[in-house]
Length: 232
Length: 218
Image 1 (cartoon, chains in turn cyan, green):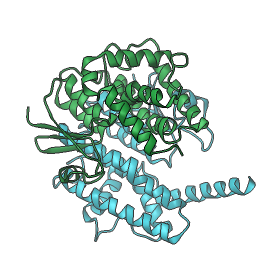
Image 2 (cartoon, chains in turn yellow, orange; image 1 turned 135 degrees about the horizontal axis):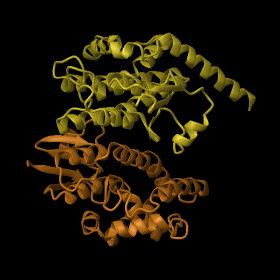
Image 3 (cartoon, each protein chain N blue to C red; image 1 turned 90 degrees about the vertical axis):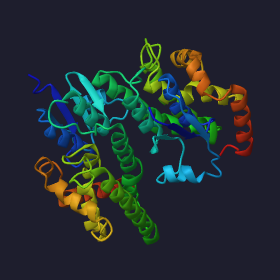
Image 4 (cartoon, rainbow over the protein chains, first blue to last red; image 1 turned 90 degrees about the horizontal axis):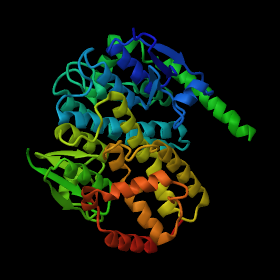
């Protein structure tokens, strides 16, 4: 039996880890979860992901797979008989899902990282504007990809839902901390409804951490960075 | 089959990736050379998000981002696969392609072109190349016996880097330090399809020389 055949090295606040957890749940794959304590890196992590030394890492048998979206595709391909495919079957729809997932990871979410670091009000305002513009693009993508259904993937959660949805906890945390609404019903109504649907989905709701807990993590990281900066 | 167009720039390794994949699969396409200083309205219409080349347009449907395009080509035209069938091998191919694009390309462009006097940049690039060198151990191509996704994505390393080194005298990718990568480059460039997809070396050398003299190292 493949029960402990699958291990996931992760950290609960990481949206990238959450992606893998959601998919493993969607595909009903039993696995052993190994929480990696921050900031240390275990020997197993360093051995399984020598290139990036990061979580998530999925270990299937003795084979490690790294990078969250690559892991998601791997799980989709291996457990292809468990539930609907996460990627659309039509190659063009599939390309759109991949394109927007890459946009989210390479362009959109990094804006949130910059926002957290930004000190001046002008810089913050510019970044918020960029983030909001990105969400408008994603709203259009949602309308095109969902084709009137509940999710980017159509009737069921798919690759792009997972790619964007995994960040919803952090987006909410950012909104609470900054007092600025990023997911705005007046600007991106489709996405706001999708976000509510996604977060309350049975598979997702026990995986995504609560924004309040993420805020605590963020404060802890900020305190550590401050301490490190003042001690040098 | 449908109409296939590629909006690209022949001297761009990203653009050439798409051409290699299409040629490997025997797909006929129209190539539209873009002027990056004056992008065409069609390009801006087909890639409004990034406004970049390459863009593949198939039956009026545009796809942007070279890695996304390569996966689309693989899924649409099944002949001469560039990805293995085994899910783990596929994951590895995707991992190395991402590694090349996210880590190697910026480091190589910095060391070879943008900050070509910077010793630290060269060292950092060499460390990344070492990882690829090890990955090639015992293999003719990254894809095994045949050219695959990772080989295509590594096209800058296989062709452009050698030519830049020829012009600048940079000794980064050398036979002594990277025998596997140099042997791989030789095998890669022996493919007639790969050669056809690249601009001729004298054109590229001329372009490199004029670009370098117009853009002094930081």
